[in-house]
Every structure is written in C-alpha cells, then in structure tokens.
Amino acid sequence: NAGVIQTPRHKVTGKGQEATLWCEPISGHSAVFWYRQTIVQGLEFLTYFRNQAPIDDSGMPKERFSAQMPNQSHSTLKIQSTQPQDSAVYLCASSPKLGGDSYEQYFGPGTRLTVL
Amino acid sequence: GEQVEQRPPHLSVREGDSAVITCTYTDPNSYYFFWYKQEPGASLQLLMKVFSSTEINEGQGFTVLLNKKDKRLSLNLTAAHPGDSAAYFCAVSAGGTGSKLSFGKGAKLTVSP
Image (cartoon, rainbow over all chains, first blue to last red; front, side, top):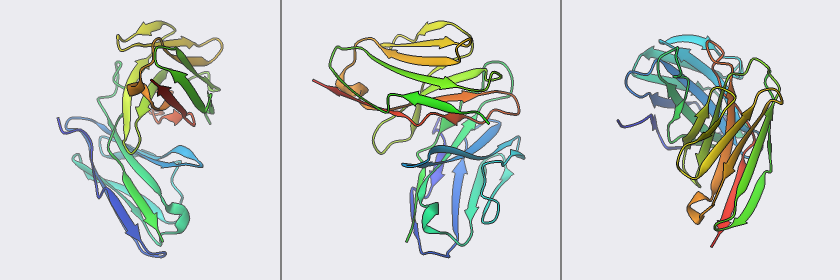
C-alpha cells in the first residue's frame, strides 16, 4: 500500500500564475479530502468528495480555488491567479468506506506551495 | 461550526516523564475523535482514534481519554522518550456526510534525554 500520493511535493509560482496540485488516494478508499496547513491558521478544511461526487466545499475560497475528482484514482486542486497568501502546505487525505468505524483519514505527504 | 481548542501549544518534558495534551470542542454532535502526530517536515500520521467515551491504551505508551459530557479529549503519554518529540493534533468529526475534520492548533512536544 503506497499510501496517499501527492504531486508535486514542492511548487513555486509567481503571483498571478496558476497552480494545479494532484492527489492519488489509497486504492479502494471512497472519500478524498483537501486541507491547507499554515503556521498562522493551522489545519483548515477545504473540500471533499465521496465516490467522486463533491460533498462539501465550505472551506474553499470561492473565487480562485476549484477541485475536481474525475475518476476514483485522482483528484486535483487548482488555484488560479495565485497570491502570496495562498502559500501553504496543501494536504490530501483519503478515507475508507462510509459506515461502521471507518471514518479515519489518511494523509499524504503534502504539496508545499510557495507564491512569490 | 465546530471549534476545537488545544492546550498547551508547547510542552517540554524529560525522558520518562508523562505529558498530557488536552482538546475541548463545541459541537455536541461530534462523534469521532482522532489524534495525529506530525514530525518536522512530515505529514500527519494517524496515532489514535476513539469513538465512544472510553479509555483506550493502544500499546504505544499513549492513553486517550474522551469525556463527551465535558466535550474534552486528552492524549496522555505515560513515559515519553525523545522519539515522541513532534507536533500532536487532535481532530474532531461529526461523521457521515459531515465527516470533515476540525483540528486543534497543535501541541509541539519536546522530549529531552
């Protein structure tokens, strides 16, 4: 089991450029979550999918952030017109099937985004 | 929304000492509780999980206590060693379609020899 895979591990963009972050969940897991981690704000929920359907995007900044899950093996988080305040570690997590005691989330290594 | 407060933000102990990290939460519908460990430069490692008001010892030198009446969750290290030095985060979830995690701000534990 390779765990949750995130690429790239590090990304540097200039202000105003676009950034696309990739996540491959653990095989067989039904849910994918995106979080953002900064020193100041800590760990913040962004959005999540279950069985590829978007369930909750209440944490997403509305104008420049979007997320998709085109198939069960990967999800993308896209940030348009990146700003310095978008600099953070973006974490992807996957979770096993709904129901029972299977609500734990397993995190990937993260993508460190730096916006200059 | 759910608010999770974690204390203390920093904790320094000597090897063999105990250490306690506590979280309080606000949503009475919260049902699933987790502790994660994050070593410097690494991602979050699921350490322990608890789903009911119970004391659990996972056999790694940690004990988790959950008090749903007081909405309090604690992680107790019974005999800390330098390898336990890391940041520890509690996380709370209502489960079901509301299964996003709400995290505490973290507690940085330093264990000196």
